[in-house]
Length: 142
Image 1 (cartoon, rainbow, N blue to C red):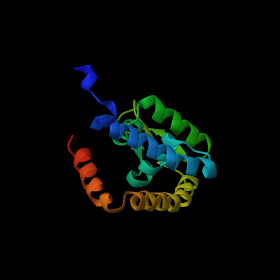
Image 2: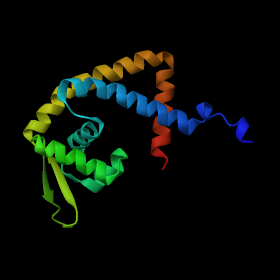
Image 3: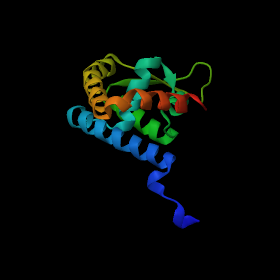
């Protein structure tokens, strides 16, 4: 039975491998120019969309574990891109907020993100709309 299993054709493996590869490809761009990694990018992007949120909320939304989000937040805070504060409703939670410097950094990264996305869509060609619909369906069915 195991000899008939093809990992490379297994959809969960293909999705994970594609996700990791595309994330690394994009990270190569912003790491070279802005000195941040994948975790920092995801925290910045989530904060830009959501405003002040807790580390727990970011973990759930960007699918990263708490230590990784916390380390990314600490690096971003040290660089002056976000601030941390105790959550008013639950002192166990830490709220993160972008600083003006963090918003400026994101404004400089976003054109790069748009160009990268356009490159990926071009590479996918006529398959892009179907893939995007399928991914949206998978992501929204939890």
